[in-house]
Length: 139
Image: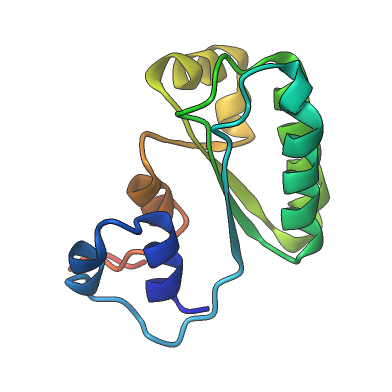
């Protein structure tokens, strides 16, 4: 998968925007995207754990977890994310949480912003992971 392919997954409705970016065509990417819109209560935690396990076991070194459409994220979900992050440490993996402002603030107050990258949207997450080449800046 190339950077352009990864961005197409992150922003499927913004194809023209992605096409206008100056992107390296051959950079290999191992990325997983989890859209956790189903994470509305504790009954969904097994599915969330399975999605994280599948992403980590597939060899992904970059995981974007979009929590914006989810309900309140509880400590069990945070613990699953922390566990996934720990399993990726040997591969120097990174997890980006795409989160609403109140969850980003919670992460900052509790120190979780040192364990995860925090983004406001998927395109910002892609930039944080170095998938966007900006004019005059190294990716």
